Amino acid sequence: MSIETLGHAEYRRVWARFHTEFAFRPSTDRFAWPGIAEPAGSATWSLTALDDDPEYALLDRLVSVVQRGLASCADELFALDWHHQSYRFATTAERWPLSPFPDGDYYIYLTSDFRLGTFGHPWEYTICVFGDQLVTAISADLTEILGEPLRRSA
Image 1 (tube, helix red, strand yellow):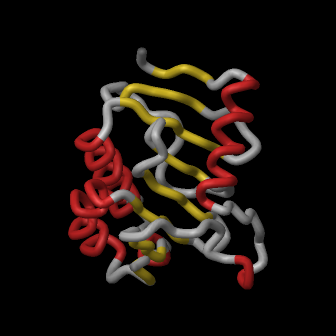
Image 2 (cartoon, rainbow, N blue to C red):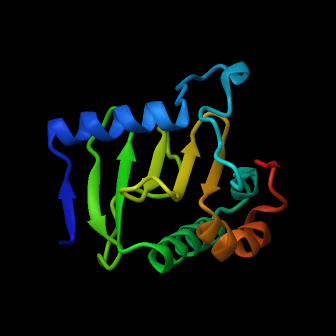
Image 3 (spheres, rainbow, N blue to C red):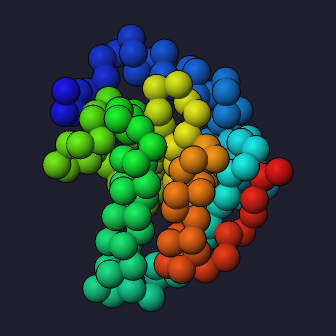
């Protein structure tokens, strides 16, 4: 398998489970943020360091670090784009659907058992990394790119 579009039934099932397990609260209202119940052991970084990156070098590095970290932890992922096409794909795919950077919508990478992944919040302008293995694999690099995390969940 390389990249498969989620069918209607699977799309609804995956999103329903995500809503339930992460208490997903989509909103542009800052009082409703962070948008999910961030899992224990997660870390969330602001993406504002990318604002002064006209050549997109930091963004490219962020994407590379997240993809490399996810591929080291999982063979297959969901790539979820809120209210848009979503995918199941092998982490060995040459080109990944979506980006960890939330470009106008919530972008989520997630293992099929929901144990690890990333949650990009477009209005809070953050990326949450969850799952001990993934957080350990990429925290130092993300901190170098984005600065210290805004928060860590106990």
